[in-house]
Amino acid sequence: MKGEKKIIITIDGWSSCGKSTLAKQLAKELNYVYIDSGAMYRAITLFFLRNHIDWTKPKQVDDALQNIVLQFMYNEKSKQSEMHLNDENVEYVIRDLVVAEKVSDVAAIKDVRTFAVDQQRKMGNHKGIVMDGRDIGTVVFPKAELKIFMTADKAIRIGRRFKELYEKNPNVTIEEVRDNLEMRDYIDSHREVSPLRQAEDAVVLDNSNLTEKQQFDLALKWAREKLEKKA
Ligand code: DC
Image (cartoon, rainbow, N blue to C red; front, top):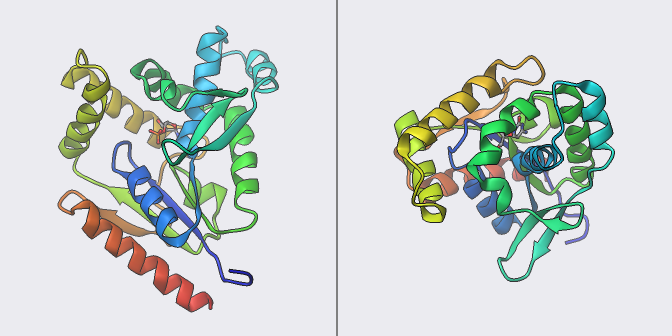
């Protein structure tokens, strides 16, 4: 609707907390755009791996970034927007453990973050966006109207992630999943540039004991309150 007030909703938190599930639901209900910022870091990592980029060398990183075009494109079949790397749909390959094992290292590089954050900010120019990640409420959109910080018990997160990966690859073990999750949590929250942390004005959503519907209802209530305030 023309002139309708729109807000920016940010969802940050630990790996495998269900951020993307909630973000997609909110975006659908409010008719907003959903942006999975983690997919951008994953696609960059995939490019680095495929092209044997040594990301400890700043020159190699900067040259490689110049050859990367990232786009989210809507897929009519899956009814979701999917990550494209240089015109190739990489939405599914970027979820592999091979990428997950390296993505936190790549996402800790300053130039990589600048590259991704610039694009993320442009996507929020017209508001009406739900973006999930690690630094969205603290760095990308520090003035966002609604900031949600998601968390859940570690064992529950490991179980959820295992189930997700097992469906695609029955050879995956719970130990592999636990190691990867713990490693990512550590690197994401201890890196120098934009570490994962809760924004001061964020609301915390611990979904350890909530159903998907309960957490959605709660977040939607928060969004409606912000929208009413803005109207
Ligand atoms: O949300 P995800 O698991 O797909 O994110 C993949 C990795 O990217 C994660 O380990 C941390 C990083 N990431 C980040 O540093 N900043 C973001 N805004 C989103 C993701």
